[in-house]
Length: 112
Length: 117
Image (cartoon, rainbow over all chains, first blue to last red; front, side, top):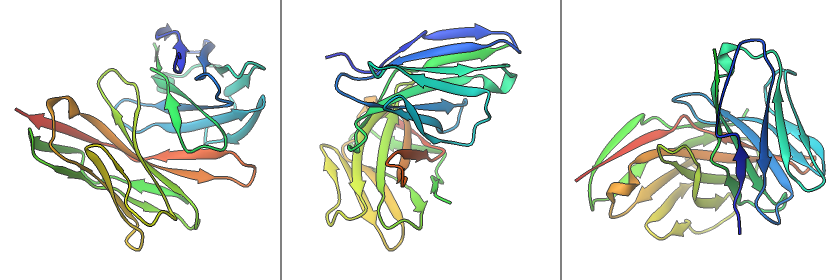
């Protein structure tokens, strides 16, 4: 049984560009959450998707948007990239009703 | 606002000894969940242990135990018989369940644990 998978593993973009990160949840999970983890810090909650809708959102600007597909996979889109967007982006999946949350390996985004 | 505080940026422990990683939290919600995660240098977050706010007993998972003191709003992680492979970042986190049924997980700044041979 595959766990949470994320792609790509690493990504280098230029300031002002747009990026799309992808996440496939653990089999049977219906909820996907995205986090941004800057170097040396704890993860910060970006948003959460359930039933293809954004259910919760953290303190991130509208440049950060997402989508959840009928198969529960999810995308994180970031527009107009800033140098400060350089971070490890973690995806986590769960059942909405369960406390267990499984994290993927992350996508390391570098903005130059 | 909910907050997680980890005051130990780094900790050293001798192999085979026990170590306690501190975590305090702040919330006005009566129902919440507390978590500890391990993050090796590879970056993946590994779930270690969970404590619900209404759980009467402290949670234990193998060598990990959570010392939950509700009145003091603390949720310290105790690792017994430390192993070299325990060297990693450790994050305390709290789940905030929203009225919409969704939830947010708030993380502390983390404690880096170094296990010495």
